[in-house]
Length: 141
Image (cartoon, rainbow, N blue to C red; front, side):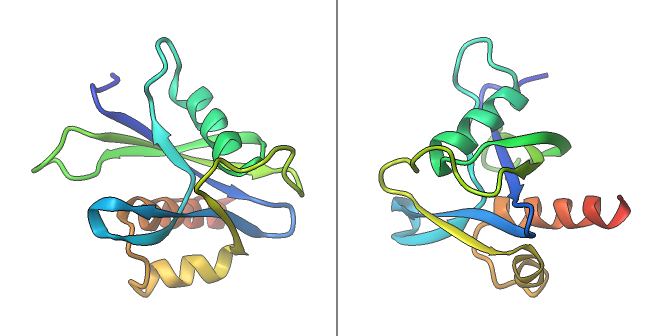
């Protein structure tokens, strides 16, 4: 069931094992954060998978195929009804488009970012959860 405030987050991994992230300024915390590509499920009739594909390309210029579902959860049920659908995607080696204005694309080794998530060094909860879910999936396949 889709909630009024649903979102998607995708962990895009390149053939060389890098994860594609975005750096953008977040007004509520008054700083730039490095995050997985994500966005609101706000297009009428759009399902979470299609939204994840669209958000990835809009934000980074990358496309991914295949994309697999990692799970979903409420990010802060005491304060919001936002529900996030998490995905893992295998990208093309290079982007096919340009990143969205105001976004810097960051390419880092996936293993390094998972280690940072495990060490509590990331400041974005959605990114931390997404990376840990992706790492667990990749270790079982």
